[in-house]
Length: 509
Image 1 (cartoon, one colour):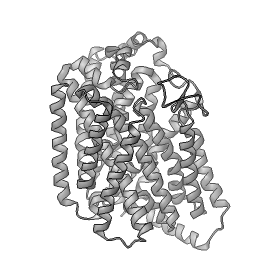
Image 2 (spheres, helix red, strand yellow):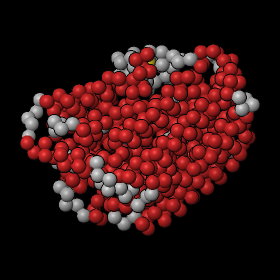
Image 3 (tube, one colour):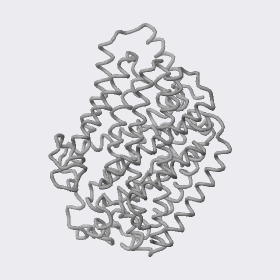
Image 4 (cartoon, one colour):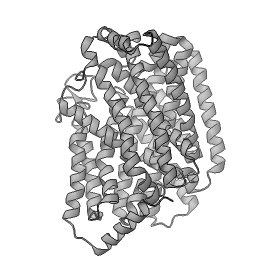
């Protein structure tokens, strides 16, 4: 067991539990539980969004993927960053103006049907669960390396902590854990990047030139095609990354934590700057790990490459810096999983239970009780699934969640705001088509099936050759929404509702 890391881990847990205790005193209503009462400022929410977004996939997964696959790993950095332009220009303000607590609220503002709300909630729970599996896989590998615990024990510890944050502190605790985590992560990543750059005399050319001999890939390290050898696979991945953020429930619910649409937009601007700087630094992390840790050592620590950044910190800064970076990664995971649990629990308690089962008649105390029990249920399911996915790279797992979000949520969000003819049948058809197609294609992909034992979850030949389903499932989501709309009867009241939505979605209130 690494003693320094152990005490730093305990310090982070202690701080976050104090935050949760303080937040629990403020969390007395569903509004406080779901959205912190809409009281965050633009810069606070911007930091929280960045903290939510810069996940284990970003810090652990991307660094490892760049170190092992070179240029192809940087696709994740580019895609995650560019995605915020879609959020900024198309989604942030309308979502804030039309919704209250969840994505389903926003869609139900135009289509007041239980089926629409139910399917939207199902999407939220599914996407959040996939994303959470990625964080728990990263946590399991990290704590196993540092503290000598088994993978199962590590996942259970993180699962228990994330449940405590949400059940007792709600969005207040989740937001402040994310803000603190964002500051720690940016500081640690900046210092590590400077140390790497210093090794190359602060010369970008020297750094890139050194990569030509640093790994078994040699000069091809700097070229695309090392990981994604099929051009369609590369395009599919990038489509999912760029379009997926605008459909991620745990990111979108953050726009309900501010008082108005203008603040929502400003929070996206803050987040974009922070996230942009961070993803530029992932180049230094990946290159540094490849150059100073070594290909074989990265694989020996974790087959998915998820420990590249902590190992780089040990190589350049010694044991204390290794412990600090690992503790920051741990804080990263805790913050993100708390947001994911909250988004899934909100969907179940607010959408399924309150609006569908109880038909809007559930009281405040009843809703709070259900939301807290839902948090426990979501956490348990995610932990069980994470135990089966221990060999997968967390960046890949997150890219799958992005593909589902882009396929199932984005078409309906955009058509709800911009297409006058769009109707209830189209909304349901689009969401279900995108969701089912993405999951089915992933289940048949090389990431789940491989003829080589140990490289995937199951042994066998994949039926679908692409690792990411986005290039198929995203168009299917849009097509499903269009066909469902055109084949169903147009109602006069739909036009009037669209006009109302147009006014509300563009109001600067």
